[in-house]
Image (cartoon, rainbow, N blue to C red):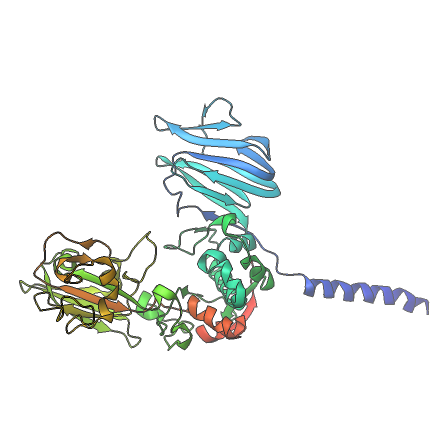
Length: 452
């Protein structure tokens, strides 16, 4: 009897420990994010501690850096300098300086060029090639709070929270893949990795991150994290990863995407118009007379063959062709070139475009709807003069150009591989759960737990 009295508490404690272990969520780890999106060439930077407690480490010297503290780093005569709390400027002779977090808070980063950002965690700075290299060191789950809202939108929580959960799992999976096998560094750039904008974008998406804490997409057999790729809008047909990057990937296979049709505003259907001379000049040719498209089964353009008025020919990859006109750093609108899922047609501007000069009922053989947007831009008694169009982005020239224009009509935004974010949002609105959204866009997968 005495033996039983001692055993029961022991077994109860063991059971309790096991239950707590199962209930404890996956513990996040610290990661390093190089801030290159807007800060890659930062010469002068000011860091303000808004809240929390930090330490300022200058090589072997450490000092307290509580809320209200300020650090300014810059250069003078190509020599790095720094100033702490408005003291005298001093030459920075070390290799690295750090702002380490001791009690969670926020770091306000500003530059003379107008960059104004706020970050969790700590910062590491070092002077390199005439500018400051800035690295944000923070908890991996906190990092996702600055990713998901900018890759999707906090507004999508209204009726589309399951899409935010799917994005959280995909973004976490992407992070795991990028930092596995000893890799420690990623960037905040959407052109290199995935977009990360710090605390200023945090909002409702944080709940989706917490609700899926630690969850990643893994291969159904090996249980290893997959390449969880995604883009804004598939245009109604996702793309095979092999057609974009050349590598076979059983998890990212091309298939029709009904949920990305009819949603997405300007990225659902877009149109780009460019003059034959400008089109040719982008690829070292004269005015273009013919464009021939070679396509993948999805409808995306594999390559573009261009022939100019002098008989010269050039073939470029579909993505190279798109990048020549892609509106980098500009607001996305439907009069742009947004992806490689498109059709092309030419218009001979010497033709009689308008049957009725005093009416917008007809635009000749082309039809009114095809040029309704141009009509808004170039109003005159004769209607929009296509012969003067340089491009949708550059507007018109003063003089007519006799070589015609080319019209590219497309669907979707981005490479189209993996999850379509607009398609995911539509699925969430229709009542699908995040695991169902993930299963729709990725093949041969299951949901697992991250090591981060």
